[in-house]
Image 1 (cartoon, rainbow, N blue to C red):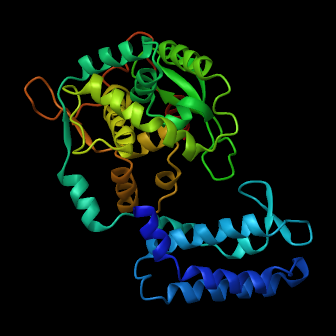
Image 2 (image 1 turned 60 degrees about the vertical axis):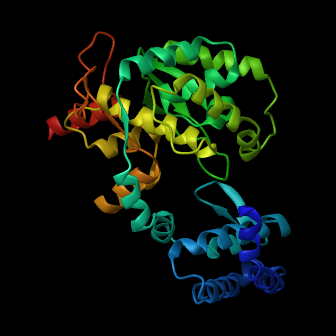
Image 3 (image 1 turned 180 degrees about the vertical axis):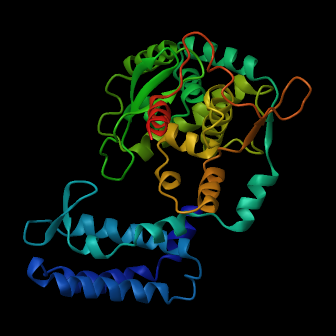
Length: 352
């Protein structure tokens, strides 16, 4: 129903796209300035629409328009450019029918009402040790939904990354190196270190068993289709095994998996591994490769993105039921070490 409403809401875009395509279809690198002017004019028309009162309203029509250009115009050296972010040859229109990084950031920021709601409805984690014991049990199971939930809880990675697109390599006793596609271009990001809430070997072993179970089932399958096929079974497994250990959101839905794995993982990663001298949000941005936070220009933007990412969805409680605000409590344990990226920064600061 929601998808139908969204399509109807973008009916105005169809004639705009037809006109734009007629104007740019036969143009190439020699007419780049003409392509630029036409795309800039188009964006001005969009922004002047009464329904585009908020920056985020522009996101869907822009994405749809760019995808339409990709699908409709054959790209050649005569009408294309190399996108420096992807290294891919794209039509010149995509260079100009776009928003700046700052505009994309503003579009992705939530409303003040949403921020206030997320800050006001924090969920308690009353027994972290029992939760980790359950996560280890899930990792050892033979059924794929349970394995997915166990891996997600202990690494914070998404369902599709776990099932197909992510690369998991053990880095230390309690950390892995992770790499996966983070953009529409399906290019792998540089590997980054992710602390694991249980022994890293248990996680890597579970990922290997999971991949063997599915074999080549997901080869050539788009990410959203993998999610559509498997998400609800993973959510149901989480509900079966974790009810009583984790307060669930009001309704079991596709977003529950992200909120459970990313939200719970984030809280426990801070409790166990975040150095006291490191900013909590920046620590979480590093271990999740959250580029919006890493590139944010202000503390307000970083906090907003952290709330949307469920980094503060939960709060850990101690035995007395009081919020446990400690950090890095396992860093002194045998076999546990801080992440390399933060050690390097400490060493660099000490040398200055």
